[in-house]
Image: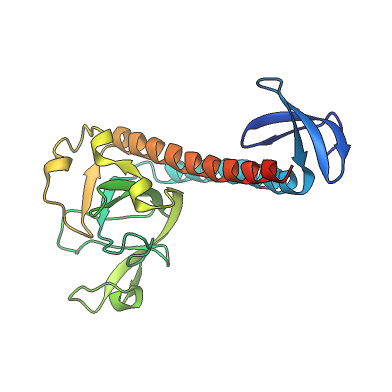
Length: 232
């Protein structure tokens, strides 16, 4: 995979391969000129992951652009959920990547292309960005472990654009100011409710969550690099 004078990257940054002496190789980092001995097998996995992320992000940007073009009137909402067991990233509909539509007699009407920011009541954090990707399917809420007093409801499929690994690691409610929901911090929020926000507020939250997710990935890869250094 690696070649002398080839340029690659890991979570520390871009580097050039100076010499290859299996099972390790010597590299020089582009940003600060420092050199390091890295294990080839581990760096190959990291480089493959980074390349896959580049492709995934490019595909996601293309998909989001297509969705915006196809649905220029997409709406933006904060979706409130309750997760009593904070150590488990599970709540109704999440494993199946679906969201239950609000009651038909309400003001909120979901459609394909709408964008959602998930908010957890227990941790008071925004933790995921999602897009509704298709038409709803009518099902019994119990199939998705919802405890609501109805036998049928509509469920929309979701594409998760960014997510924090843990609920309490998301964007804290006190870290953002929402122009379209200025009293959000003081509202008596209800689980499974939807709160409309404007596109600017949505992008503000989405950017904050994307940074959180990327920081978590960097920390995880730094741990891998430290483990690699310990083997030297």
